[in-house]
Length: 106
Image (cartoon, rainbow, N blue to C red; front, side, top):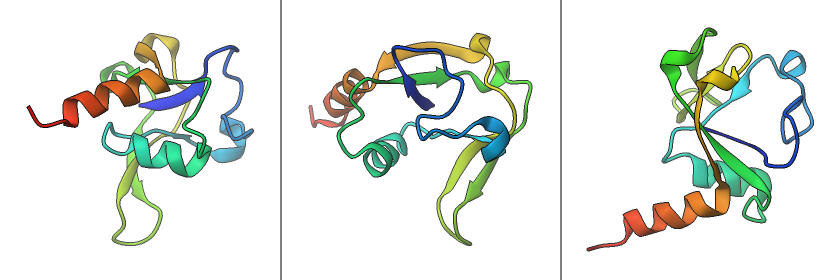
């Protein structure tokens, strides 16, 4: 999963860096997304969307890497993200609301 802007083509990351500069695209597993979004966007990610990616549709390798030895591993895509690999696009706010409902006890 990744986050991207809702209102423009993606030519660089939401942090202003190109794939060439960064070397890979930062992705997150569903359980990692809330923490990553809070850390990077603090305001709840208004205006961002969640891109749900089908790994089977990626041509470039995905490597799971930790920021520090023994730390949590995050998926990194070492190449471009083809539009055909994006199977769902949802506003980040909606994704949060749906996740909260799933996490509530029945």
